[in-house]
Length: 255
Length: 318
Ligand SMILES: Nc1ncnc2c1ncn2[C@@H]1O[C@H](COP(=O)(O)OP(=O)(O)OP(=O)(O)O)[C@@H](O)[C@H]1O
Ligand SMILES: [Mg+2]
Image 1 (cartoon, chains in turn red, purple):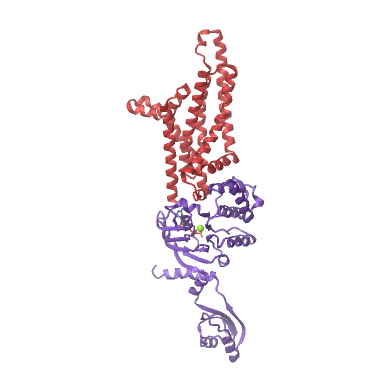
Image 2 (cartoon, rainbow over the protein chains, first blue to last red):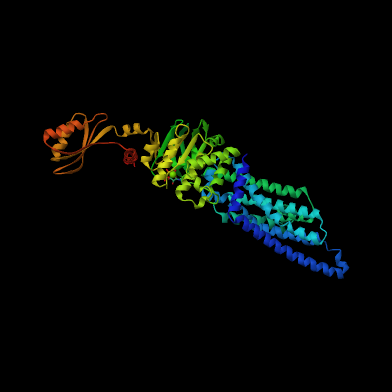
């Protein structure tokens, strides 16, 4: 499998065009803004709690800073990840480079894997930028590392799922905008699908709740590592990548 | 080396190629000719394993392009028409990527990329972004990526389009130098190029093969006569009549004839030179013989005759 050269090429393309820099910068900026406002609020609250000891028991820096931060970051991802993945196949198709790529001695699967891993690596880099924030918190308060680690794992898995969905959407069209809107639409639907679970109720409600991305991400942020959630993301990734492979093969047939 | 058997490709309801069969021997350079929309690119895309045919088979180096696609792709270099390349990559890293995808090791890669850039005369632009290159240089980068990895078979779709005359000569001699070690199929609209570069041709028109073989054989087949052009100052009626009586002359045709004289095209059996007889006839008849020359047959004429002949042949049935 010649995944590595494809991976390197995609990384090079991310970093020779401004996409990677812009997305990473905007991500860091917004995450930083959320962090500082949450952290400022927390500082204020903890100062007040010194005067009122009854409140102090409820103030825990992991719960009141990191958890809301993780959930805010997941919203940013919902908006930004479609932009990271939209180019991956749609642009090859529009510019015609796919004709060369698919006639080199690489399997379609290796092409997809290389592209998927490149987007994942870029995402990991973006996520690494936010390590700064727990770093800051640690300087002022005692942090429970368990929930922070599971929180990051949750974010990573969620992003990995977004990328798989984005890759599939990008394989469906020549148009990057269409790819990105499709990705966003699908992700938003999966995000909010759990909300209607309450009205639906019963077995269907359970199913909707199970499909919801938000539901599964919440556990990680609470510090709960459940294989059910990991399996949920893994299933999603495998399904989306499988569909992307199928769509790439189908495009070959159409010419 | 390349064997194509009754290949057909439909795009929806459009039949791009129909029952195409031809073969190319190892080490041969074959020109793939045909008017616009004839189906050249379609055929080449199938050979390059980019898309499967609707029916029929194609084998390269004994392997089926559809069922053993990966094996075939290891043995071909392909340069599509209008050369799609990554505009955001620089030339040398791009070629390094191609070499790696083709499975070359690190040191071999460095050596081959340098060598290929040298051969395609792109060493001086190796640090430039591909998107900023002129058309001719992009074309050369496209050729460079095709010959990387030293593939047995090269499939080149209009490799000299967009080049200036000097570059065309350079690229032609590059392609010529591939003969023997590589089997090449190239499409082009520049017919003189084919006579210079190719050993044989395959001509396709409206999706079907209409002629194939070595150029000389095709010339004999479609122009079975030797031709002489004469200009004579004498009354045309007499000239036409007398010349037709020369032994071996098959046809005489007036080209630009006025009362005082004119130009004629005299066709005789191939291998039969009638210039001496024409000269003697003119001397005997006291005609003013102004010009007498042999007319060679170019591939262009063959091409036009074949493609036009197709249209004439089709008309009655239409
Ligand atoms: N993707 C496609 N979808 C539908 N029809 C197509 C497609 N590609 C080619 N065709 C049609 O197939 C026929 C053959 O096209 P092809 O590109 O093979 O011609 P060509 O011989 O390469 O022409 P040119 O000399 O202009 O490059 C044309 O009628 C063209 O319109
Ligand atoms: Mg073409």
